[in-house]
Image 1 (cartoon, rainbow, N blue to C red):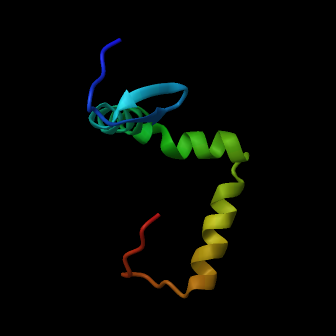
Image 2: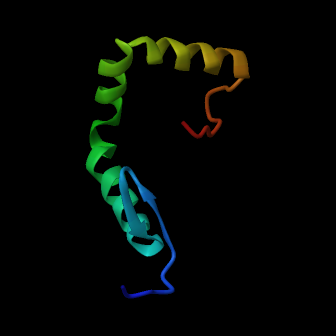
Length: 69
């Protein structure tokens, strides 16, 4: 058995090197980013839009403000 000093972490059900996880997370993000709103619509049956509207109204955010979604 070979020992390494490489640190590992979980990625789903896999054990991967820390450096590899960063790359894998970026790949997942980039693969879903352009369909993010569609996925939210499907998974929440559109309710996420109501939550977002309600949150914006309650927060006091106004036109011209910058908000992180």
